[in-house]
Structure formats: structure tokens, C-alpha cells
Image (cartoon, rainbow, N blue to C red; front, side):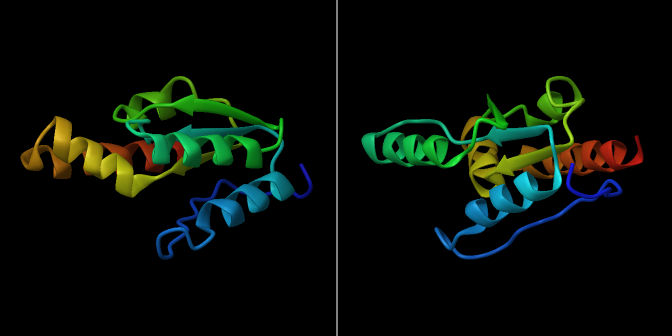
Length: 124
């Protein structure tokens, strides 16, 4: 690790395809040793397949990959537990997945679970 960091939660915001992921990847690689990329997108067409391919190519071998379109809370608590940094890409896609698969009534429930999981992660 380049420097010693306390556990932090960093939210990167910006427009569609504005470089958020690239910035976050670079930041994480500079500051952390163990990196997990938690992808929420599902490949449903050729355009998305190409975007996923380009994203995979842009990541160094330092990154582990976990593809989970819906159950990111479970992934954070189990498969990502020992990682120094977890980059979740993309929360908007994750929320869309919830709307499509679980319905609008479940969005607040899933958001609350994610916020609780992130809070617990910062405390450990």
C-alpha cells in the first residue's frame, strides 16, 4: 500500500461516461494493494458486451472481478470481506436491476441494506 489510509467510503459522481470508473480505478490502484471490482451490469446486448470488454481490458491484474447484478450486499459481506478496496460499478445499474427484478417497492429496502453493510464495513 502506498500510504496508510483509514477505512473510507468514497462516492464518485459524474455524468454518463464522464470518466468516473477510470478515476476510481486509478485512485484505488495508487492507494491500495487488494482490489475488488464489483460489477453490477448484465450483458444483455452487443453494446454492453463491448463496454464490459473495454472495462476488463482497462483494469490491471491487481483487480479481482466479481459480477453481481443484484446481491451486492451479500457480496460485500462474504466474497469482498478481506479486500482493501471495493469499487462498485455501477449503483445506478444496480438500482435499475432492483426496479426490474424486484419492483419499485423494494428499492428503499435494498438501499437501506447497502448503507448498513457499508457502515459495518467501515467499522471493522
